[in-house]
Image (cartoon, rainbow, N blue to C red; front, side, top):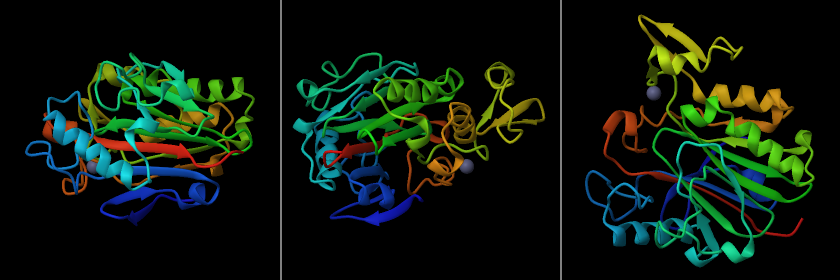
Length: 267
Ligand SMILES: [Zn+2]
C-alpha cells in the first residue's frame, strides 16, 4: 500500500491504488492545472482564502472531473482546526461546494457510508484519509498542529467504531503535509507534543523545535489500535516543493490543495 502519482484526464494527483481496487477513490491535488492567478496559482480549491470565487468553482470542477464527480454529489466543511467530525448523509449532498455558508460549520472531519464525494483543503496541515472495507465507511480529517495535538485522528477512529467498524480493519492514508524539515515551532506549540513517545516527532533545534505532524498522527492512530501496516504516509513535504504544492508556512497568502475521497460501490 503506497501513495502513487497518477496522471489523470487533465491533472497530476496523488492516490492510493490499493484503495481504488477495493472501491474507494482517493485524491490529493497539486497546485498545477487550475485557473487561479497569483498568489493562488493555479489550482486553488478553497473559497475561504479570498481568491476569485468563479476561478475556485472552475478549479473544483476540474479536480472533481478526474473522479467523474460533480459538485452536486460532494460536500465540504468550514475547517477551524478543531476536532469536530460530522457524519455525511445523502441529504447533505452539495453542501459547501458552491458557497461557504452551506458547508458543515466548525468541522474538521467528515465520515460517510454513502457514495458521496468529500473534499477538504490543505496548505501544510495533515490530510488524514480513513477507509474501513468491512463496513464501507470512508472519511477525511484535517489535522494541523492543534487538531493533531487534540487527537482528531483518535476521534475519527472512535466514530468508525461507533458505526460498527473494527479498528484493526481500518486503513489510514496520511497525505503530503509540512514535514519536520520545514516545520519549526516555538516552545508553546512544542509543549503540546511533550507527551508523545516517538523521539522523531519533536526535536529541539536551538531554542525552537522541529515538529513531525505526520508521525504524531501515526502515533495517535497506533495508540488507538490501528495496525502499523494499515497506515500509509506520503513522504512529500508541502513546503519543500513549491512547484507542486501550496504552503502557508512558506508563502503566507496562498491557495489550498484538495483532499478527496469517495466510495464507489456498496460494501
Ligand atoms: Zn520540507
